[in-house]
Length: 133
Image 1 (spheres, rainbow, N blue to C red):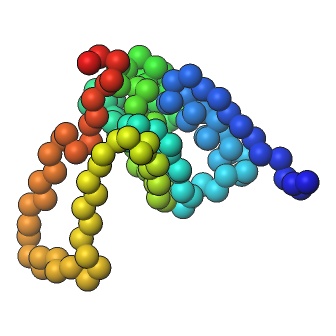
Image 2: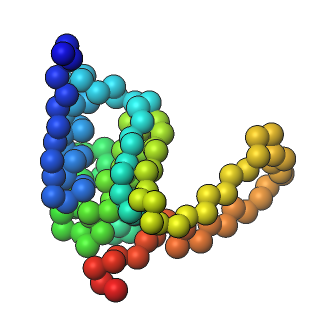
């Protein structure tokens, strides 16, 4: 028999998990920072609406309201956790049917010492909605 209880939260819209996470941080049952989110989903949920100011992530009640009124709110719960300094790492577990190519720089890869431009296409962070296809 396990000595500790495991709290399970079930939400309909993904971003509604932010409130119980923030509550767990306030109650100190979850550390303020440097924890890992293990995310099982067909989509990475790494969106964040352009019309919500980044400072909103530091006012949880305002963040909840903004995400509730946003079309992208359901897919916008991970980046606020990272931006606020809570989540230290993310493990995205995708379904086996989803084909994904992951590219990584080899350890010790050369990094330019002078100024450089990093170009990341926005579709790197977006996914298709299977319900709209």
